[in-house]
Length: 394
Length: 135
Image 1: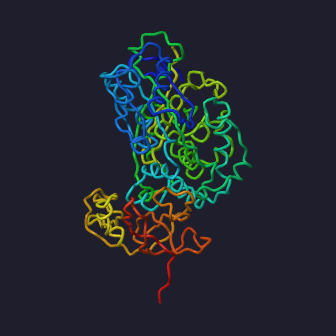
Image 2: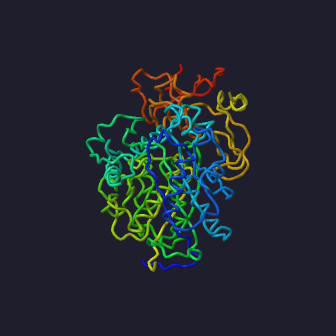
Image 3: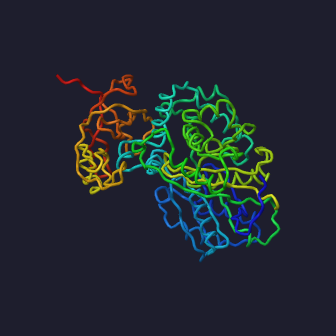
């Protein structure tokens, strides 16, 4: 599929990614600035006219609201229009979508999206209090449910209904760690094997430590613009947002008519396929939500890559590996790159863009032109999906 | 301390009071005022029986700060006999929790959910225990 440029295309003009980890010495604002500075260097001369901050936990963990103004001021962009977009772990994709809509409206010519999260501010039990706020406070969190427990409730039922072996999900973790090993910015850069997965201690049965992504500090930024206002000769192949969509499902797990189906993920993916005028089979790389391995399996099913109850098989048979039919988590995903909650969706889109530009280094999938990124909030109550395409005459 | 937040849900916490949709007869818990099945207004109260089955379950070893004093504990999705599913803790289990399986019948009991804030407000509400056959 050859994609010609159009002056109305929304392009990713610059990318800034920082390593995910425990950055004790850095404030939220300085972490955001690192990513913003890198993205602005990558984009050349473009000056943002609006800032969309993707963040989920700062009001609780950093006692800080109004991140838009905070980050605009700290990043030397005082006066610029700026907001926080919050949709739990889908904040990143939701923020990119808001920037996309603003650029399409032509009220803004250059938009900056920065996903930033400071996780390491509090002890882990307090972090659990904050994370589970993405569920229903009055009917889920009140009972002591954690995000790992929510994933476990889904995974337990999935394994029961489809009668799966204990190690059914090992392939997700093995693939993520193998890809993380080639990503110098990943939190975990060591490959692991199935045996190590099998020996991992249980977190919330059947979710073990390797089914769960590590959550840590991180920031990633994107500069977006329309092709018609991008005057420079780009240093890299141009990548356009071919589709942007968002959908919601029930906030609480117990309200889902079908516990084992991510309806927001399938609704937003199907909308994105229609907008881009493509089908699931045209997606060559898929950065999906792998905060817990069960959600990776369900995302593959929701987006049309596997039948119901069979998403895990794509991990078992190697289809999700870089050389497979639908590579996922090509920079390690949340499992190995590390998960920065509201920033994760921005990491995904930045990494996908690097793939399409041929800048993915040791993680490069040869000659990919079309890819999809999807982030989920909580247990999939929010799904934001973006399809990116390389512009071939750039 | 969030006094009004907990007070206003007393009927749900102590009596599993949900709603019935007078248009399509759907039984709804937690109450949501618009019927998820037919989209019509639904605000006629209905007390649920408190009987149901375990739909899924897991054990929490690393609790949030709010529930640290109870850990470890078992949480479950309970499919109520009337139709809806609720999230709740399982209680009165054997020490090794071996008796929990998907599909076992359970019944609602009232227990302490947690204590809220430094002033020690105790929040009570529903948990579920394996069904005891009453004579």
